[in-house]
Image (cartoon, rainbow, N blue to C red):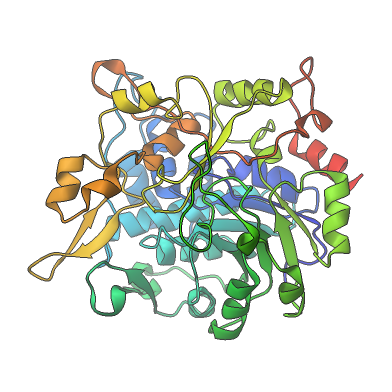
Length: 474
């Protein structure tokens, strides 16, 4: 097991928030730094279109075992000096069940580059975090991350039963497949195939790959037991996440009830039974409002190997959040004015999604209503079977007329927000719209930020990832 003795796992937050700089800073201390695998293909493309001023992306691509692939990506996306500020970013091929070659190449390269950069300057493990709901890029993404030496794969927002077997096959550079949820398909899924050999280049010696540890994110002992017993291949442990953690949350058990504020109501049935997880005999890390020294000690006393920490790292200096967004959120937190809503309608996935209230973002109703609905990134598209039997794609956050024309229920479109564009905007790369407008942000944080003042102050709001670790470890 490659993760051993780490008390703290840094959360794999958002698209680019847990970027290589943050993961490198955390892993350099001996704890587990984790890069977010969400949307890395789009992020790499936009970094290259912005000119890659510091050269990090190009340096990482030079290490990719497929030099011709790296050259194609640079030829397609790199703009010396960067695009003009008023110019929109170029479109990037979307993933399909059949497998789009250009999209997969960009995914392999982007995941490789992010992990490779995070591993520089130290010899400690680096992990990568994926959302099970974003299924189409999985196989190419994991292969790229493994080529760069990712030590741990963490997956939440779904039931990733087949991931261990996929990791086993990819570690041998062998063909594999993954079940893609397709509405209307027989059995509800269609298998997507991936052949690493299809990307090999003449004269290139492929590295021997180490199979990463697999840590699924679970919100119940029932799910942990299912993954432990039914997964084909090894599960190394679990991240046990309470619903107060940021990002996507598991829906409440039973029929949906709403609080007076319109949030999904969680009750006793949603409490996590740690005794059931302890019985499995695997290490686990607790997540959701554990970012204090006392709560870390409490977690260890409850049998945990440690904790996963998200929001404290999301607001630190090495975070990928745009500087203006990060500073505004830190100031809010220090003044006790942070507003975090669990929005049951925001995400097209159907999972509740944490939304931080922040002026000028999609958390404000008027900003949401003024935005023109569009689906041009497609991370969260839903594959479905068309009348003729072919596979189409729709998203509850795309223009409602288009969604309904593809068989979507109009009720599913109400209140849905384009997380894809918003999350990329959060890290300072919003798409440029007509008239010079830009896609607005939508930031996610955990419920509990009351302890942020243990890391910083109004007078000194900036703090480092290493400082978070020093405080938590006492």
